[in-house]
Length: 151
Image (cartoon, rainbow, N blue to C red; front, top):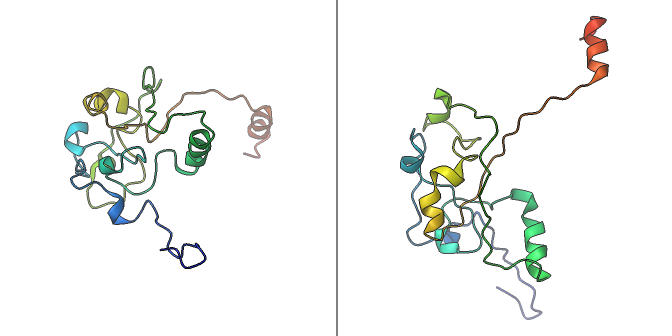
């Protein structure tokens, strides 16, 4: 609430429980199938759809906010998920599905365009939560260190 000087003494964070929708899509951690687990929805475009704390893109969300504020991006813009599937599939691994463990990697986060397409078509702001790439990096210094037995 702002005081008489117009300064707010309370900062509303995306982690506050009131920032979730009245009936958000449930998440069932530990489910082996994406639609049973449910999508991770950290949108700010429709607060009623939110079902997690934080925001899509994490610390990069500031760049989206700046683009919206400058008029370069519509506030209700949803990403085009065409061709966003990973080039190299990973998992699944049994450890990803233990509902008693802390989740640090969304097992379906790189394939949301495929597995949660029905939610996207219904207007939900579904976005990838992880990125996967395949690369080959040649670092001559490492080759030399291995050859000399230093590494």
